[in-house]
Amino acid sequence: MRKALLFVFLLGCALAHAQSLKKKGGLKSKATKQDIFLQKQWWLGFKAGVNLSEAVPVQRYTVLTPTNYPGTQADKAYDGFRKTGSQATLEITFQYKNFSFSTQPTYRQSRFTYSNQFQWTSTNDANASLDQQYDFEQKVNYADLPLIIKYEIGSNTVRPYVQVGIFYSLLIDARQTVRISGTDKASGGTNPYSSEPVIVGTKDLFANYWGLMAGGGVSYHLGNVKLVLDVSYHKGMSNIANTKNRFSNDRLSGIGDVQDDLKLNNVVISAGVLFPMRFLNSNFKSIDR
Image: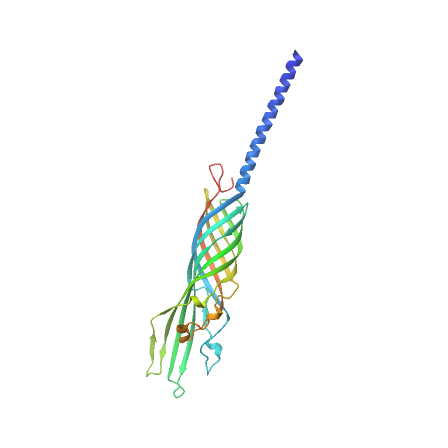
């Protein structure tokens, strides 16, 4: 009888120990599933900001050819990163651990300026001349379609990150403003003048293009929401000019302007908010525990 009771006692202890191990294993399994859940996330959000543009001439073209000085002196002077544009972005991102794979369709307006000068001098009177200054402001609207890889550094509430990608830009619209000023010394005396701005639609002078981008930023995890601020440099790799329509705009050709072959670079600054798409509750936060 004592042996039987001892056997029952030992069996009960063994069963209790097995049940304890099972419970511990269940907690471990649950924690593992939660960790795996936290490693993956879909984000949907919106960003907006400003950009600065630089138009880089690849090949220059002209309508007017000087006869008494080198033609290169009549080349247009481009101003880099002078005018502020704007953009609005929809971001869709899949995150796995510290890596993110993202597409960020963007509506962007970029602005750049350039200028040119011409002088006409009378062959009979060297003092009788007409100096003209042409100032151009070009606005181009694009839909950018990028693919971006991002890497977040660390696992704190505030996380810096770096990103690289490739983009293709679809032309939406373009418009140019021309301001003409100068000094007239040919009509008697010295008479400065300026004209009203001329606004010309120039969509037919531009084309789609592609480029590369790289940059960095910082994200701040506010509960289940992520606030982001990033800066990136977008380098155009192809010509933005429509070579077939180079001389097609009569209004611009009439004032001596024709489209050069250009590549467009941009410095883009954006801020926004991202929302997690996978189910979250008090036990599953978007930020690591």
